[in-house]
Image 1: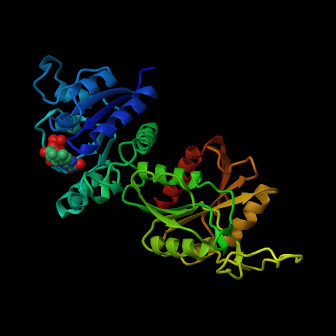
Image 2 (image 1 turned 45 degrees about the horizontal axis):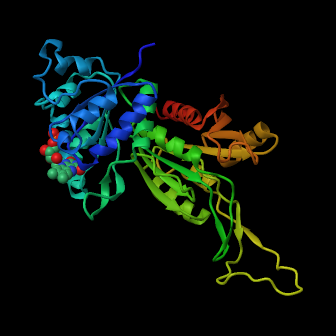
Image 3 (image 1 turned 30 degrees about the horizontal axis):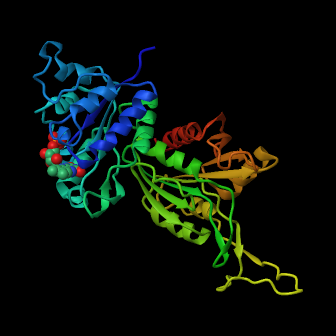
Length: 400
Ligand SMILES: Cc1cc2nc3c(=O)[nH]c(=O)nc-3n(C[C@H](O)[C@H](O)[C@H](O)COP(=O)(O)O)c2cc1C
């Protein structure tokens, strides 16, 4: 089988060096990558590096190898175009259809999915001109990944950093796997919760659970690749932020409820993959609880936490909002799942069996997605991203 053809456009930002790592990941995972840098990009990383790492000649202009008509052919034959980093200038040119070098020509002749990974100073990103260009590109079906927050060129910190190359690679992989030119969650805002809450007993101890957050992150990543604006409410995960996703860190169930309700106000779908503690200690000891000589410890008294899934299902913030819950069960998995679906009032419930060496922390999952309409979708054992894609397929059907 022919390798998928990827065009890696590199424009002139300081983060161009990170595109070398993205290029390696793409080639090592079986993609045929043609790098098309801009003339400015070559100030940061030279043509020799791109050519040696990709195994293809590199040119910035339409005037090289004219007999092969590269200004048309490269775009026409691509299965995916990813521009990383995408400068302010490149977003403007792409939004306005300029064609003054090889990359901008390629963007106009490509009929495959196009992904932009912008990187620039916060002021440039937030400028209304850039925001309007991004909106134009998204409206036309391009996936524009939100920049990450962090250290920028020099001593500045803020939004505008190129997301981690591994995260950009994941977006590319998912977009390629779906092979769609029109992302089906485009224009949608989705909220995903992931991880596990921690309920503090004292300043050093908490009641927690084994959830790693990997399923929630897979949901966030796949939704972003399908064009959605994603808010990820992350409870104690320690995982790198997925590219293009707004991450809201939380600790306890009460904090998670607040963050979910706020984000859900304008959301089209809410997927509650986080493991939320049902109970929390009735009292929080402001000092560390100490052993008392010869005495048994005091029992821990628990109180119920709010039932967030039931609450958002009952009081939909928007008409037609789709609510998805997760049920982690250790026995009688399907029967318990059906009871829970009815009790919570959500539209879909992903039911999976959990245990010490099952699901928690692993890269794989196996589940059945129960629908309030009586549907049942079995997802065989496989990567958590495959389950995530099925969840979004079912959500997209309901949104349509
Ligand atoms: C040291 C340096 C770093 C730069 N970093 C960025 C950047 O991160 N993002 C950006 O949009 N522009 C950045 N610029 C400005 C662009 O290089 C400039 O707008 C250029 O015209 C972009 O050309 P291109 O879009 O054709 O690659 C930087 C310029 C310099 C000199």
